[in-house]
Image 1 (cartoon, rainbow, N blue to C red):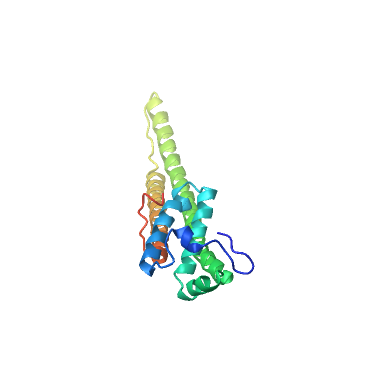
Image 2: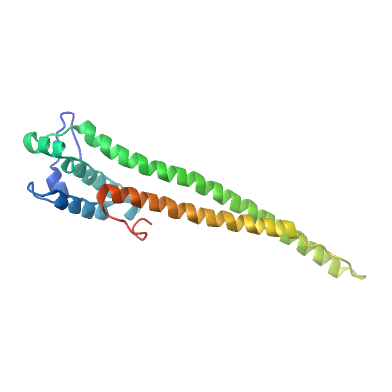
Length: 192
């Protein structure tokens, strides 16, 4: 949806597919439907779908605000700063959630990698020690790197659980944001 410097824009009623007489519930339902059909996360980040989603979000920002709707109905223009600000705030919050989650997931992956290295080193040293002891003609003793195996294994498992937990929590927060904005609960299959 394009909004020019005077606040003139495409018809938000047409974008959402509702008549100018639509009530708040009809507008909300139309936005939920449009959001579900055009949400970029549901369409592999398609630029075309993202533009359609932004247009639907802008149309909803206008039609859900009684003052903006009245202004559009009377003049065919809107307070473009407020519409763009509303859209920008929604996307900024979601981007922040994704950014924080990405950092936390990166730290969890690194911790899992370090744990796996400790585990692998413990198993490798134990295996080498056993191989050397069993191939010796007079026998021998070998040692087991219990500390490295247990520490590494536990760290890797804890980090993988944290990674999954962060992913689930970030998706839950994003669904909560969209639920507040649209009163529609995107299911896990719809957000990836």
